[in-house]
Length: 197
Image (cartoon, rainbow, N blue to C red; front, side):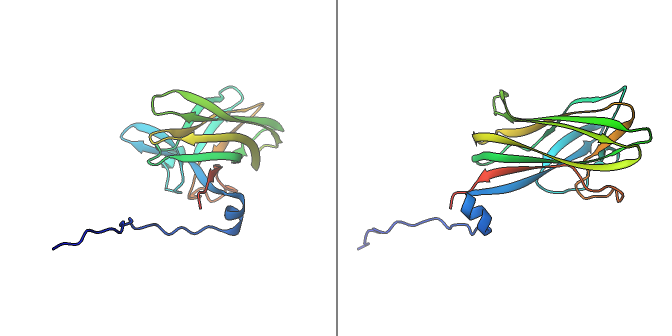
């Protein structure tokens, strides 16, 4: 005679580790690096939480006074699991102004939630203006607060950038592994995700 099993079996859990700041705030920041890759002749731009070796010819977004870089999109991969984001998002920029006199440079960046069906919602806007001399590296951080947003499986995030310079040219570095040795850093986005503990 077989006795019925009255005890429920539970699946194996996962072990997570968090620092005290994450636990106290209920948020954990994930860093997404701006980067590019090439498949054949097609260049793709990414927001990657892994600092991979990017495309050698696309380690910087280039713009000049007569040729701005408008509406350049960097996307995450679609999320495999639902997630919740919300709070202060930080956009760190690193770049270089080429030869010329003092120039203002402008970087407008929009963060979007792209749903699986293709519809989009703007979450944040980063409006950055800075004065820089020619042949000078620069870094800048911009912050924006986003409302609590639920990301479903298949959704992804997009950072849309427009970069321009007044009277010279320059770059916004998108080099996660810092292969451009002279750069002060690379450009990245820090997004707060809710932690369920």
